[in-house]
Length: 570
Image: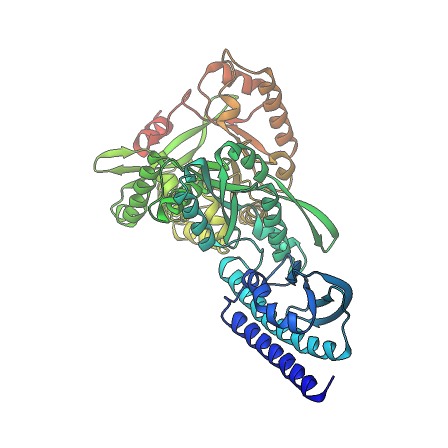
């Protein structure tokens, strides 16, 4: 080959490489910053340069480990370019570290019937650097997109992605095949306390992963933050989903070694029956339903209805008007006598809040749940305690025996670290002996609240104030946790009593009730049965050695003047 021809071919090769690099740069620079776009345009970007460098195939292996942004990591193998002329097995590879502490390996195969020369490999090194640079740019774009659309801690979609997907289904006219869920996990604060440092995020990630495992194509779960999640579940799988989230098992590392915990959830559900117009059409119903589910003890799933919406709006008005009505003296005490079963003498009373508004009695079922929702109920609890203190002070000054008056205290009060001091301050203000007061704490299913309840019961006992567990038997794990509570009185819920003597009575009711009473008395507790309405119920309670009862059989809740006539008039 003469020199002129060699120089001409060399110049042509250099021009082809130059054009190839130019084409690669132009295509990738104008490619959107994400991996799928990078992969999709790589064949076109590499066409000219690959031909010039005798490359028949290019592939990349990405291996990104688990990291805070991508908890599940990322592994993929893609062919970036493949020549129609085929390729040989002669190959050249380079591996680079990624910013996510993973690796990106680029492998080049020579054109069919050729092998790479050392000069080829030098150019392939330059080509690899470009691919690595643009690949890193694409990965960063992918991560940025992931951060925008996903929850970093769990790796599942975030709220904006959830809403966007809901409207995609809406446009396809399939959204009405779904139920929307708003989930709140139970006892998460307690779980965070028992797991090792920084394990809380691991628990959330595993919980989210377990929910994701349940899903089928077309369904979605997303995290709002904290222990709140939303989901879109096909209606024909809704019941199965509710069963699934009632107890998801997670294995975690605690100070005492590996431990399996069960995480339940309360849920607000909205059956989507109409197309969506705005995001509020889906978020408002599930929020209202969840709000209601969290305020109803022992009901983990609540469906949104128009009636529910109306009740919530009415409840919000109750809360808004509460302070004004309280100042006007509209919230008053009614007293329901507590009666000794042995001789049917009155030994005290339960103080109950009643609302007299514009001359009418408002049902407690209307205002109590409303005030419970945001903790406003605590103000009412202390107002009732104040009115009881006023009564006791007057009765004692008149030489009357008040007996023991019990006042209901909401679970919200357990969050007040100064609860004992606040109660004692009020008793001291009215010069009331603690022996006349009993505080009723409602049984709870929250493990964290049980711990707080046990602490307060012990502290009240030291102050001479009796405590009782109200609505016993309606909670979860009642018997196993009762031994840790220093309470004087166990109040058996009316649900245990109501079937006694009825035509559909289950014989087991009597056995269970008898056993509970025996157990409580063996732990030096007095037992009071609520909701006693028949002579047969009273006789059974007497036979099984129950101490006290209250209910319509003896008296309904009474205004103070009527209660005084009943108790103090001879």
